Image (cartoon, rainbow, N blue to C red; front, side, top):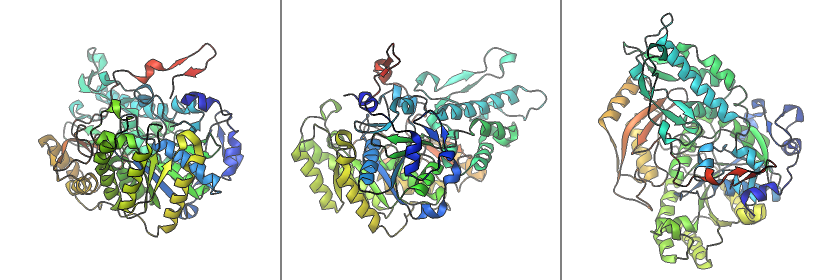
Length: 555
């Protein structure tokens, strides 16, 4: 069966039954039909959260379709519940960009999915729309103020950094000219769009502690300068109140279920290559408050999602995982060993062996955080016994526990061995994570520490434009913020062609953006773009609906 056929073959339990497994009273639920519900922030219990076994799922450097972090996360939580552990999975909401682009869906796979799969992939409870509208409301208020003769703040249109956003891969919107049409259309200027997952509003939603904090963060957004060079913030436009109104429901996490009836909390969806790559703090803390084991994931490889989860999210939330699961696949390691994408399903022990240094680099990077690591081999039908044995033996040589994950084929039952390794690892953890840098470090030092410790780079080099921007941001008093490096997910370096474990390279920072509402600086490495384009054959071309309203092609 296809992914969507598998998802449709299971009748979801009523969401009140799922809530009951977490001891969430029915009166706390805001129903979106029978199988989805918003849950309130007052479920957060800081004391209970402190005792939770938080498990972070990350991965090696992925191939374009991904290596199955969400599938492994869902299979793992189903397995933990089979072992009578009270477990919940907390993951991100899919963006329509990859759903209609290269992936065709992002709700897990096979028998390790969250349902209702179609709703989760397509619009869900409207959170992305609310984020998009709040983002674009601020853009409209900026344009209006520039045009106004009575309440004009004197914004220099050339300095406006705020872009519009849309939840779609559309390369034609990366760079545009806005406000054409003469005097009534405003002052023409160059601008562009980000994908919604890269909007600062998304980052704010995922870092805010409550509605009041959300509103304050919206007000703290830096939008540009006046003609005199004075910084202008969203609060100067009185924008934060209306923006928060648009986000009043979006800040509440969403409760759904896995195919096996395990509770799943889904909220927020920043990409890890251009944003912080992990679900919201409030969703994770609710999971940690109502379960004993909370399984969560961070996007792309550990050099992106895990680094930002640990250095940005954990720092802000005051949380620390007890185990980090690294998802590896035989096919991806063969790719990093020189095998072409079209041939990675062919048996090739030599290519696999040549690709193992990529896994080694991820393990070395994660060891710097000081908590136990477990490798999950996400199994595919094309894997041979010889290849699996080689990978398992290599993990043993590194002293890292390893287990096969058959969640795609067998659901929770296929992840029992992995769950047992995770239980043992969390039980052995007696410390909190060690962060890569201190907030007191200057921005360049922070970037160098990440580049050296996490990427294995020699140095960080900045363009003249980036140097000037950084001087400006530090002069404004933002030098103590964490850094959120925008970098390709396809390599440890900033060059997507350098696969495996590259050595002897620098990270080149082309320019900076700043997210003063979210609270971090964004160095943009190499040719990284914050509005992706569609692939040559988009997944959208295979997605359709029949006369009965049944959706086909999501996978």
